Image (cartoon, rainbow, N blue to C red; front, side, top):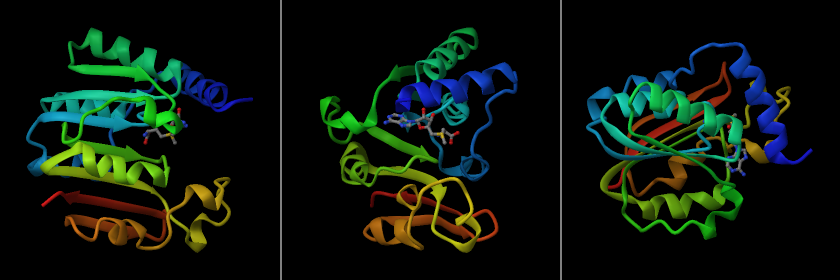
Length: 186
Ligand SMILES: C[S@@+](CC[C@H](N)C(=O)[O-])C[C@H]1O[C@@H](n2cnc3c(N)ncnc32)[C@H](O)[C@@H]1O
């Protein structure tokens, strides 16, 4: 089963559960920084973060490999008249996407790790723009998760990766095995 099929099947199950997609709780708490503009939600899934950001006055580009997820977001965006442009895209073929540098006020990545995206994302964020990321990191708590270490951050990795940026929030939650950063390009 290829990546798209695998994720389509997971997303179909979630859509059938008929639960509204929810935003990341750490992102939700950052409303004082979320001033609107252009946002990019990479590997957006069913769009909890995209919907939240659109309601915070962002024009959102939402990207995911799963057409099930993207169709679902499109329907929600249309029904709720939200400025979200969902797009099916395989992020491992990122080079084919022709985005200009400095085009987003905010880029969000949650629970998707592809380290080759870091330098592209850094270029795509405008001066003074923000980056939010959260995913699993290698900790005793995530050892038994069915997620390969390849898809987990190293301890403190995001702090090191974004050491030249202003970090407004960083957390490693050992209990939940997640690492979160919110930083600004300045
Ligand atoms: C764990 S989910 C996270 C979804 C969402 N960001 C969230 O936090 O709820 C991972 C997402 O990555 C997407 N994905 C996996 N591989 C991808 C790829 N190569 N290109 C784009 N999206 C991909 C999946 O379809 C899925 O929606």
